[in-house]
Image (cartoon, rainbow, N blue to C red; front, side, top):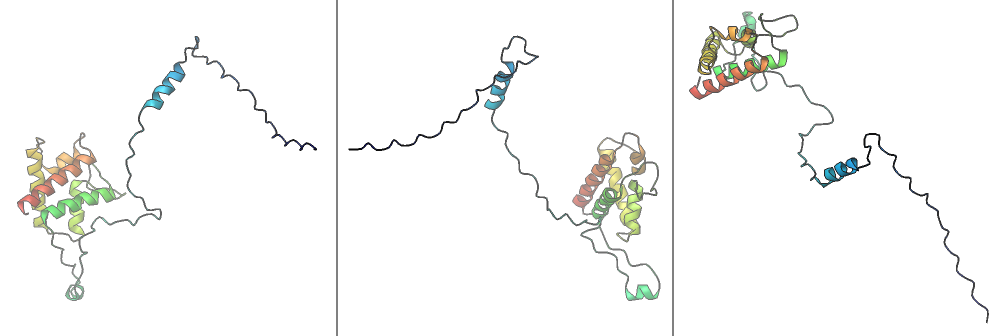
Length: 191
């Protein structure tokens, strides 16, 4: 009886021998310090992943500084008499929040009410909010009283909010914080 033909053997692939890692110049005795550090770092738990805010891939729409408040509109009588529109009634707290948002949108300045780039100081922001038709001069006076109350209550006495704005140690964040605290105080008092 004839013998069956042997099954073909799979071809052997030769792998190159691993090359030893070159000696590191900063480890003269070959103590394996690098391997020890890598082993330690690998044993640490993975950092917790905190979800970031969603960012729309299509961009965003700029929000005006007076968002949430209606724009002053001239009535037919206002247009016929060629007078400005009636101011939008706002509280002192709203006025202070709008002033903070105006500074955030246009920039902050020390030593002048405004400059050519549109940046304003604290008084310039309040004047701009009033000029755009939000509130009355009485609203601005009430808001400035609240600013002074907060300055004195927090141990930063000043003759006026403008003097505080122009101090060399005052930063933009300090002005925003002052406006926020004064707005919160005015809202608490119902002003």
